Length: 193
Image 1 (cartoon, rainbow, N blue to C red):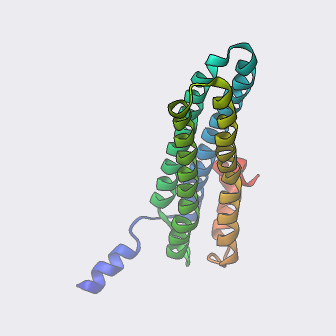
Image 2: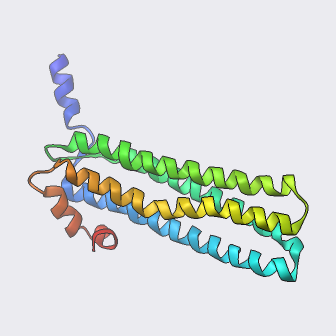
Image 3: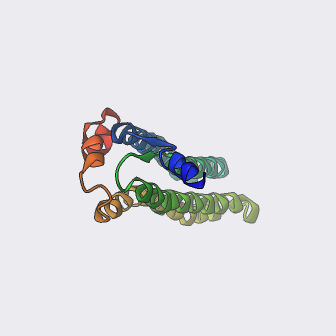
């Protein structure tokens, strides 16, 4: 009976390489699109801070609050993407189980790390108005906190690409079923060209 149970579960939550590729790329493209939007919002707010320092210094605190919200949103997006990566089904290839575990650990863990970096930057932004009422000092502190947010944003692409390179190096799919499916899937065009 135990053998029947383990045999029955071995195909649970498995999908074809084509369906897996589409699901995987939907997670990546959704995450990338959301992060582009957040990055654009952060860049716009940062420009507003620079002009506010000279035109209306008290506005600096409003922009700091906006940046804290935007970076907090990036943390939530990264954490949701990590959960989606871990929830991906197992592809029906010889190394499907290894691939699922490796992706959960490498890409899911990398996205969790990015979420933590964004939460740290959010916390730094939130501390600024609690620790100073001087707009000039706040603007200087903002620059320091913004560098943490920028580092996290820069880490997004490298987290994804290094995870994918690591998977390719493990030769999980010697028949290249997943590679072909990734190249053929419409959802993957923005990711794999």
